[in-house]
Length: 125
Image (cartoon, rainbow, N blue to C red):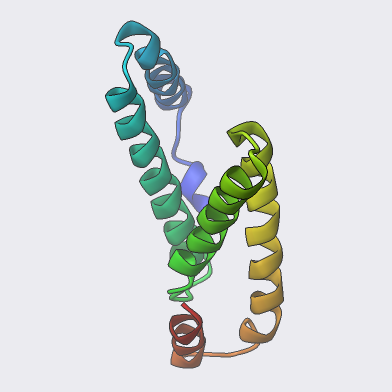
């Protein structure tokens, strides 16, 4: 990957230090509001990194991210409400379900080229 060749050890250490600080931030300021804001920020951060990975490295415009995140969120909520599972059980299960859904949808659509891939993912979402 050419994108990681320009990183030096100081940049990596600074990034890891910032992540460690964000990890300990809820212990410094206890409260549900800050944890909620940090959770939403982490979700959007993961979403943007996956969007950059898909469109930046592969060159394909993918509009199906909202579908996969929605499937995972719906699965986690369903397992929490219907079966009373906590986040430590429902989160891995929702990741597995969303990944399987992405694999099932990805095999036929990755054969498409050009704007047809983007249109297929947009219609699925």
